[in-house]
Length: 417
Image (tube, rainbow, N blue to C red; front, side, top):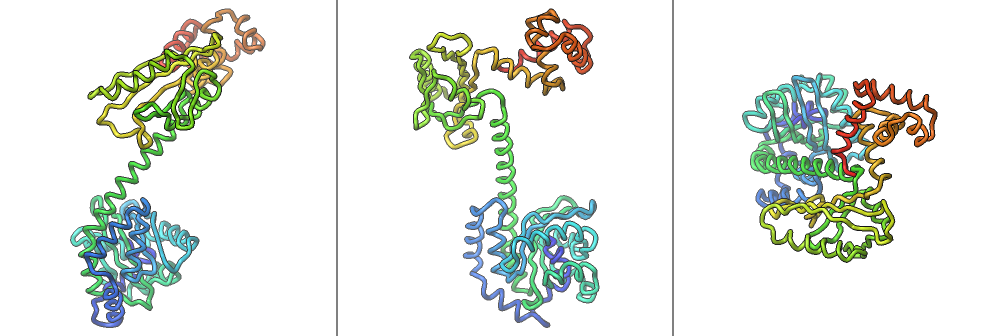
């Protein structure tokens, strides 16, 4: 794309000189060493499994075209923005590539003549090379060549348009050669025309997978941060994964055992039978299986230690959740005031912008309407309670204690307990 960008601009300018003239023999030599086109296409798709940044594909193109540097850059010529998210070289180390990428973002938007003039070629034929848009004399006299390309030992460039939005926004795979390897010739252009449809397709698949990977990372991050225990189970009820809140409950509760293979065992035979029946029923449901809530009672008979497990099976047509085999999402929480209060405090702080102490005062007001009782429960002075209550009124837009409590109740009714 701007393959002649930083190293592309100048390169491209002197880049595509047909095999005739100086450098033609070098170009032909490079092209003749390339694999047969069909074999090369097989290798191209074979590199796709290497990583989502297409580095395997870029390395293959480096070898085939004799590039010093091969990369993918994005240019918004109207906004004056450029980036080089992927760049590989068999001759430059990671530090040098990082420096080149940063310099490109800084210098290319203004100085890269080749990129600024390649848009029509990208749209018309899908690729462009240096000398087609910038003469040798103009390239060598430009600041972009002297300040960017020459220090990187880049002289010739070619860009393949992978994607574009309008006449000024392009994503380009750029090939950059040093002076000793000569400009790109007709055999190189023929190879580019043969490979470009596959490179475009490969890049589109890469973008789609990268987007899905990002969505999965977001889902995973949310899963890990939810204050309620979340379990991920396979069709047989084995635990595949859980977040920190669920892990804590499973470790602290004497009423739930986890076998080495991930099977959950409840001390309550009734709860165990319920789980087995629920997992068996989900296999029989061809539509969306119904969610099930089950109580896991404390066998010690102590109040506040019972657990509640909500099972939310995925319909058969849905993809696995978060991990291979994840077919049922479980929500696990304790029926204790401490756990409920902890989640409630988080809800009030996040939704109303309260401090932790202001949220504690609001929680206490649900059951203790007298200021002295609230102060005693929280272990603070009455004046402290009044001060925090005043701040809570201001932040919530309420003016009376009853209004504030009603607002708190409405919010907490939506939160898991």
